[in-house]
Image (cartoon, rainbow, N blue to C red):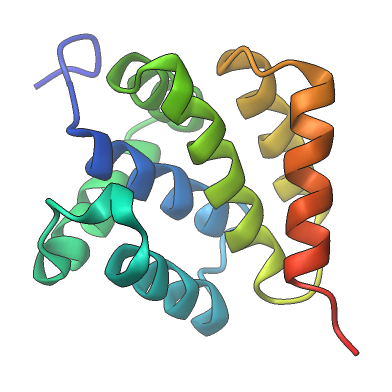
Length: 141
């Protein structure tokens, strides 16, 4: 299946968003994996998703992003096209949570977040509010 015809369920698209945020720096960290698992098990948007299917969704996303030089851009396009606008803000928030999970945001991660914000058509002020919420949730003492 080509990415032009790939359509994900809403939960799968949100999982792809988290995987992309985790993998963009070439190192999927344990903290990020734990965050993804916790999110899938607890947020209402994943109520119809069986957490046992998480490894399959992660692998599917990893295959997409490693499929060529434009894998990240293709994954973002698939996510955008699979989500209604109101869930694109949720996707952005989940990506921020995964990036923040290890306590540092690397340049590659920040660039990805910027790409997502633009491709998901998230207003800058809305994005700033989502970003501030993530900083508050992930603050270290």
